[in-house]
Length: 283
Image 1 (cartoon, rainbow, N blue to C red):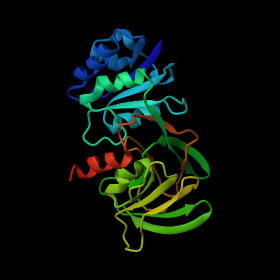
Image 2 (image 1 turned 30 degrees about the vertical axis):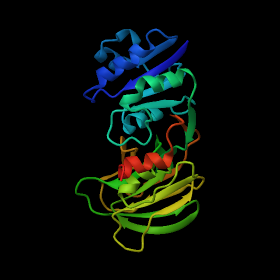
Image 3 (image 1 turned 120 degrees about the vertical axis):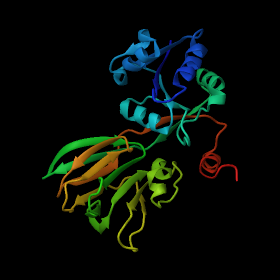
Image 4 (image 1 turned 180 degrees about the vertical axis):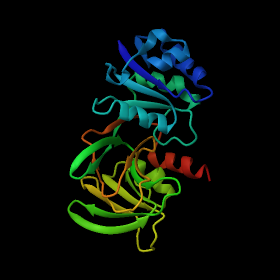
């Protein structure tokens, strides 16, 4: 019995219709569908619901939503070596690989094992206060140190490994994986990096000086961000979905996570083709 845990984004207007297509396709096959308990009740399939589904045995995770939904699933099952596949209900969708017109055909390919698994590096971020780690989070796209609301510009120092590289005045700093280079980092002026490149991208947000530029470094490097600002409204965010408030003189350490995310991809799509279609349309 093949077990698939389905993670539906209940904020999407057509989520019930799409989930029903998935359920109907697997109904006569040797496949067990699981749902998070809350979502199962909302969809009317309470018998499929599982508490703490992130720790439950499964062969594959299937997200229904956009890239953000898939990112959330990757964090929920971090450290478990489980492949994640995504059905796209979002607007862009670099990570999700199944469009609405191809749900049944791609699900059939999953059953036939006609897919590949791409390992995408993840980030682990730590907040250190007076030498003690007080928070840890993971991300597949990016970890960002940024100011909140109307707060003043941040002042922070940047070390890579044991070398002080720069002192910044900016609205923040994005540390992204190659996968995340087409997300927030791209909007802030960072480069596009093929996910197969083993690199991290450091992109300042609205820097106060012209001589500060994005940097591409080895994914084996450790990034140390030393907060030197004089206000309390500073946050570190993980994939733009989780945040933690940090204080003056805290340090944020970002480095490659111990385990990669495992993303299901099909042979009919090429990274550069996807990039062209998602970023520039068919021009």
